[in-house]
Image (tube, rainbow, N blue to C red):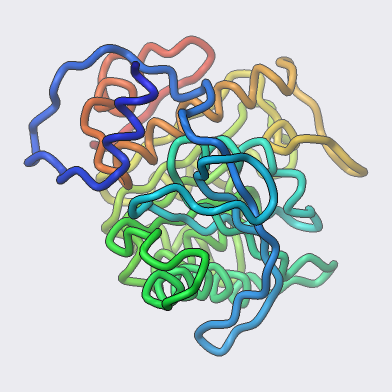
Length: 300
């Protein structure tokens, strides 16, 4: 029943007034949601940008190019890390789709000399493209996107680019990042200007984009509401499905890190982007503050 309830909330129920935090049976956002997951590979063309992407989405049946589940769904664009293929994030993005999110992952800026600013523009263009597709008769995503509930996410370089894109787009309502790395232009500076909710998730054993040098600075710069969730023993490459050359390691295994990541980010996105106020405790309350394995800092 909890997953069915969450799916119903994602169908577009109005957000309760500020301060209204109803009690509900606890759900586990680290477990799969109630939707089957479809995906499609396509070319995004919007805002003068054009690039390949994969989109994961809630569906009635799993697989490639299946129909999108009925209803208007919140959506997010996800930025990959430096020199990382989007396939490295499949488990996380499929998970978000199972909870009712449409998630588009640009394949752009994958070389040795990526443009951080260009990647931010690609992420913003992905959301613009989804908005256009929502109003295009015959599109797979016609009527399937809640254009008032658009967010951004990303890992490492992609997390920094998500912050840059959030600062450039008034359509973005929430941003969640994984081991976000400083960028050029500065993601720390961009964080200081954001007035939307922002989540920074890092790993205490990250030796590539460590918390102190990256996410802590972004969190410190960001006005409320914001939170920093540090996974004890988590590592930079623990956020991807498989490690490659130059990856680090931590004191916890990848499965544990990814379970914790799914839990804290899905709860946050459901609360801030999908409007599910029943998850207040898991985002801002005692359940968040006392979650084993995750150190919590917040400016609600």
